[in-house]
Image (cartoon, rainbow, N blue to C red):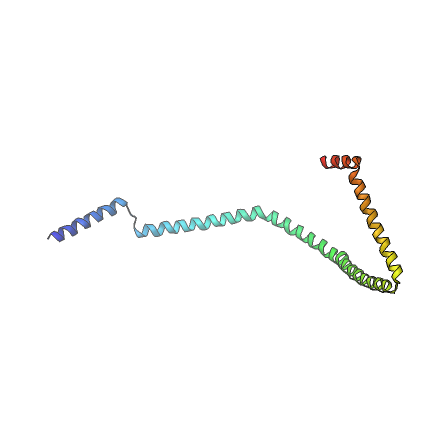
Length: 151
């Protein structure tokens, strides 16, 4: 009997608690979720329609610009890049032939001619280095450089 009283009290408390929370019935949940889902579908359609109307002109402009750029790139590749590639190939071949010719010519020179050539190249390098040294020591050059850097 005390267990039965406890059970009734617990059942009554639970029933009062559920009534206090005011939980809706299952049918109300189903109808509310159906309405919410329909609202989500309508909102999604509305947003997608707005996005389509807003972005379509931009998309068409982008497509038009890409087509123009594609046409320009086709023209450049046909007339410029292919020609440049062929020119680079020919230039590389000519450089190879020139280096081989120069190497053979250098090997055919006498030792005296090689020393004269080496002396001439060394003289040019020493003249260039002397010119740079004099430029660094001139006050006018230093002032001009300082003024150029300052601007």
